[in-house]
Image (tube, rainbow, N blue to C red):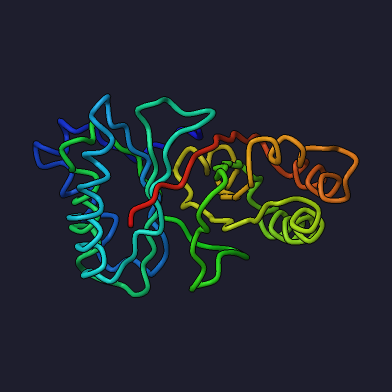
Length: 235
């Protein structure tokens, strides 16, 4: 998982720093997505799911957002970690407070957050499909090459999604941090559903047209890292 610089421990949140964190990030923010990477620190996951379903999700909806998914860990994440993806349809002053109902849940020990902008996917009405696994892959792309990276992605997906039981949900761009500026990169999150881990492995076949396109895309990156997850059923 990519190192993020935006994040808070539960101690910081409970001493009031959490409120200022979200106020600075959410006030007047354009519609888009929030990606919350959480450490539940051994708390019963069922309790967090219940809180998300009964308390946080309605608050997000009231504020003009939608909880698109809770992703539970598979390969590449600790057993205590999880991610929540939230979509917003309009600027709202209640965005920060609604997100706090997730990040300040009693089960959350710490969190990292990214406000994401969709690129070529997803469309405004797209939702993650149930079943299979979701792979979260972060790329550090040389900033002048972001548009070409997205174009090559679209080209590769034509063969990739035809050949394999897989579907790209989204390619998102994260705001550039001071470290990103220093390194000359832009961070992108690719979120892909595969029917299984076996399909994920098979899709890496270097002889396919898709992988040959993705290899050209890889030349534009400074690095990448991926992890798999299961989409929880929130009812």
